[in-house]
Image 1 (cartoon, rainbow, N blue to C red):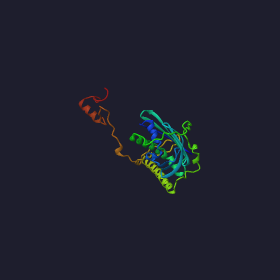
Image 2: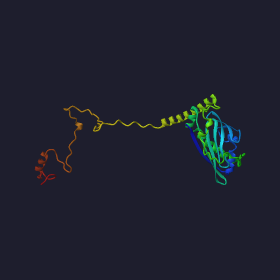
Image 3: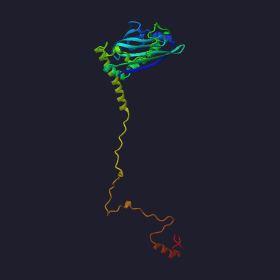
Image 4: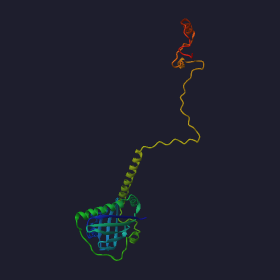
Length: 277
C-alpha cells in the first residue's frame, strides 16, 4: 500500500530564482525538517538521509527528468521506496507556484501508524513553507544548476513503480533498533494524547437520561391518589356541616308563631314584607 502527497505553495520570487534554489539539493536540510543530509554523487544521483518520528531512513535517488525553470523528477534506486516530481509555474514576473508530488511506501508498524496520523503530509507542508521563507528572505538563490536530464522524454510524475531498484529492501536501510523504539514511543505518545483528549471531551458532556420504557398500546397509567382516612359511618363531624344560607333579600324566622301573634296585636297583614299579596 502506497501513499501520495500533493502540495503547492506560491513564492514571491521569479521562476528562475525558485528553480535555481531547488537544484541545490545539498541545501535541503536548511528548510526540510526531516532531511538530515543530501550528498550529490553525480549530476543525476544523490544519497539521502532522513529522520521522521524517530525513524531514520536512507536511500539513493536518480533524477529521471530535469528541465530548467519547469520540472525536476526523481525515483529511488535503493533504500526507502519513494518517487515524485516538483514543478514550477510562473504566475507573474515576481511570483511562482511550486507544485510537489510525492509517492512513498510506508514500511513497518511505525511508518504505517505515522502514515495514518498524516505525519509525512504535515512535514511536506511545513517544508514548503520554510522554502518560501528562505527564498523570499534571501532575495536570491544560493546556487544553480542549469543542466538538463532527459528534457524531451517527459516521464510525467514518477511513482513507486518507477523506484524498481528500491523494492525488496523492506525499509531496513539505515534503521537502527534504537531509532525504531524512539519512533514507536513518539507515535504511540501522539495517539495516546489524542485518545485522552477525546475521552476527556466525552466525559465532560452531560449525558441525557434514558427514555422511559414504552407502554403497551391501550394501557393508561394510573394517577397518583392520596388516601385520606374516613370516620366511621355512624359518626358525623360538626365541622363538615355547612349552615344553610337564607335566600338573598329575604329574612324570615324558622317559625311564624311570633309573627302571627304580632300581626294580631298590631292589625297588620302577616304576608307584607316578603310573600305575594
